Length: 412
Image (cartoon, rainbow, N blue to C red; front, top):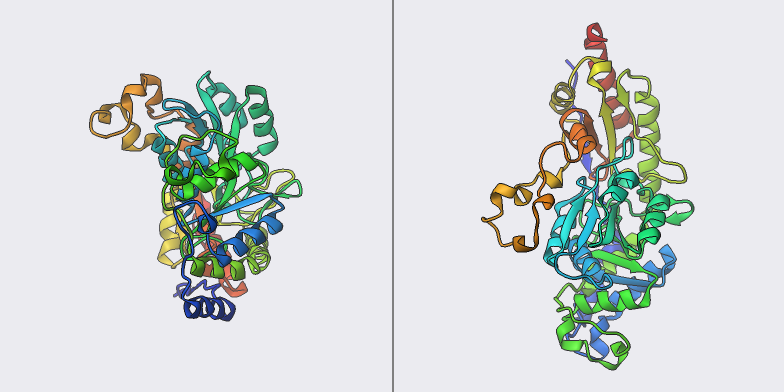
């Protein structure tokens, strides 16, 4: 009888984080933010230090910490030039619901473009087909650990005078043509919640090279309605309200130490992926992760595609077998465009600004065929960031895949 896999939960919090947290606790300064003009508007010593280190690490002019990446997305969307209720933002259906909610938050309209084959990220050709006179921005999600096709997306954005938001929550530390993912866009950002590459428990970082956008983001983070007339911001108009999206001193102290470990964590994921690549690459009907030209992958998950016609069995059968041996795989991701909130039959049951919405903004099956096919028939992924995989663990996983393929070889 084959023993089940035993994994150790990943823990990248160590002595250095504990030491710095104790220092903050002893100081009594757990947060130095004030929601008014003046010294406290930008936060305390650790917040400012963490933001400065992010700027240097990712080679960006401005970094703004927030209490979650969801808050960061809300700040990013709210800072877009001339965004009005009813304007459109194009995004992928394959992402976390925070991308959708950050658009709806400002009474803007989500417009879904399909994903690329092989890479799971938003398809540039599909984006261009969705652009209208009301389009204001493209939200490009760097899903699973590598960048979207930003070269093509930037060309489209310039052609139609659109802004780009990069959601790099799952790809922190990955690179695209030598630059860090998330830094090609007008606004980018990273998640710091507990199952990302580095974390502070909860938290997020917004990055940009645009001074005006950075200032708007800071305003939204910290009660814009109270401070929008302060001298520092008098050179541009701004009519948004703000919120308490501020990161504390403890989280920032942890973040400073975690940032030192990012390259090590990324390297560890990449080495694990190489072992999996070598072990799984020859299984008929199984596609291992593909890396686009010019990109590196940091493997938030290890995404696979199952071709049922090639291998002769469904991904569901494989999933059940792997789970029975405690291998941490996920069967499905998300198709945001098919959530109940975006179905026309439910328009009277929610508080969204449906009076602004025409029928074309409601979605149904087959509106994003690649995303839906992958969700229903092909996609399966190994969880990478939540566990500390040893070489023995990885070899066990490969062995289980091969055993399953051998048992089902009569179908091949």
